[in-house]
Length: 153
Image 1: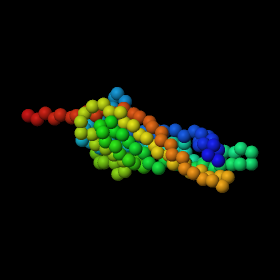
Image 2: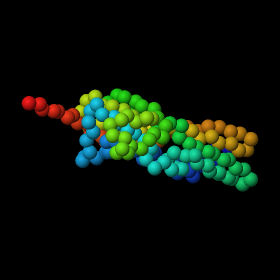
Image 3: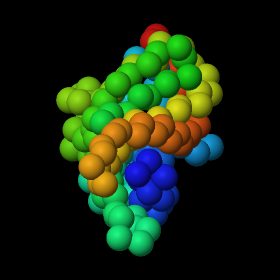
């Protein structure tokens, strides 16, 4: 049964989440230290977030597996680790407020690599047996944080 469960998982074609983050990754986007950073799962799908169910068979035997992401661990590149669920996508109307569900604030300027690891939990059963398979998939994105200086006269 475990071999069939593994086949069912492989047929899911699971992949890491697409990172949603503000400031946006890329050389033309700079966030400000002390300002909220928002993180979320961009366009979650069956294969990046779940739930997803697949069945694998061999002769008269079959095993069904269902998987979904339990949570996402965000390593922010500055030593901070944030655990979140799906998160809320940032909108301009939110302004400077902090994310209600998945955020971080950098205290030093620099370039950081943000790593988002989705923790899949896949439960399977069939042929009188059942079990759980855990699978971690990681995606990363670069973010740049800068500092604003104000001159007064």
